[in-house]
Image (cartoon, each protein chain N blue to C red):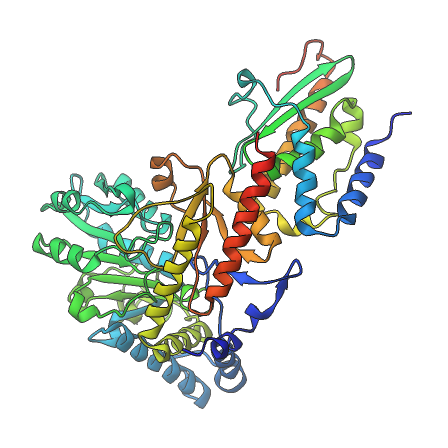
Amino acid sequence: MTRTIREEQDEFVAAYNAVADPLLQYDMLLSLYSDLPRLPPEEKTQENLIRGCVSRVWLACGYEDGRVRLRVESEALIVGGIAGVIVRLLDGRTPGEILEAELDFIRRTPLERELSTDRRRGMGRLISRIRDYARDCLRPDASAEPRV
Amino acid sequence: MNVEQIRRDFPVLGQSVHGRPLIYLDNAASTQVPVQVLDRVREHYTLEHANVYRGNHALSQRSSLAVERAREHIARYLGAERPESVVFTSGATASINLAAQAFVRHRLRPGDSVVVTELEHHSNFIVWQRLCLETGAELKIVPAAEGELDLSAYRAMLDGRVRLAAVCAVSNVLGTVDPVDEMTALAHEQGVPVLIDAAQGMRHRAWDMAASGFDFFCFSGHKVMSVTGTGALYVHPKWFDRLTPPVFGGGMVDQVEADNTTFAEMPHLLEAGTPNISGILALDQSVGYLERLGPELFRREDALLRHLEGLLAEIPGIRILGRPTRRAGAVSVTADGLDPGDLAMLLDKQGVAARAGTQCVQVLLKRLGLSGVLRLSPAFYNTAEELDAAARALDAAVRMLGRWRQ
């Protein structure tokens, strides 16, 4: 049975907080990010850029068989790791699941203290962009793939 | 200099961060505050606090006297001829904006110009840019290839239409020590007044306003071991009669009628409202602290920065930005393919406080093709051992990120 976003998020939070060495916590994020596929150059567009991030973050969204597909790439690796967690939690979910989900892993880990205001804001915008896309998918006239 | 004793004056330095001893290398952003300054603030509120200047009671007179003694002291420290030249502000940003609105705005006409450099912090860049846009004047920008100002270009920009040259004493990114005395002399040959932004440069050399002839000079308290929200603007007495107050309120008036108001003289002309009394007294105390350290302050900070530069030069993958003739206060680096924010976060995990980003100098960074840099800025209370540890931490961060780089 597919696990819920809450279950997967709780698992990540437990695993992250269980890492005793602060440096290895970041290593975990970097490892997560390294497993994600990179965006092809043609998808690193101005339209896919998440505004407000000091280092550039691109998000590509798609909608297939009733599920939202997400891919992300970041110039900064730690931000990429955090964005990677977000994408891993929400990729392949239905729009309804995405809109109902509360993403609070930053607040529940040391990341809350460690992320600069700019980076926290940038991740907030990433999540908002995904939610907006999911909302668009549920529009009655969303017969074609929603625009990102 | 007894650094161990000095470090005891700064209890914040003794803490641990992520289980590691704090190594505070973000002094170009804000310095730490010694107990002597904190004690003065507490003393003020415990024994003498009242609003200043217009009270006829003991506490008000005590506070007023303390503020004016602070002004006299800071004026002496700056080598100003008159204490009235020292206007208390909330810092360099407020000081520069004040000079712009009180003096330069009324002198700018279409076709005039203001000269700045590409090393300027946004506080000493945007205000002039906006003023020029609003008045039809031109903003001229002195280039700084390799981090050194092009003095020939600067000289060529100085003509009869330049209404001000605004220059930082020290670059907050590259640490470049600008030849502000020479630049002031060149400007004065053409009748151009000069504003020196010493937010970074204040504690890196002795200053003498009378000898240097600066027209305006400013600094921030929170970069000279005082509390935030404090600073001062020095105004040369020859400009006292050419100032138009941009902020109105109590304390800066002489006579107020229903249809007109006459204004107080300097410095109160530019100090509307209740001043930041405790902040001013803190600033006074911090200036006294630096004064007691004497020239050893400059020598020690210079030695620490050179030691840091040497360490950084040995870290594989790290590139030091700029090659100025003289550097003070800060050094910035990049690492190929690595984000400065990532480096800063990994340094933080190892107890090292450094700053990553544009450092409020976007014009310079864009010219260098950079979106951000990592800046390390020691102060006299840091030690060579701390710098050694910071360099090891940076090396570890570069190696760790390098393993995961795409």
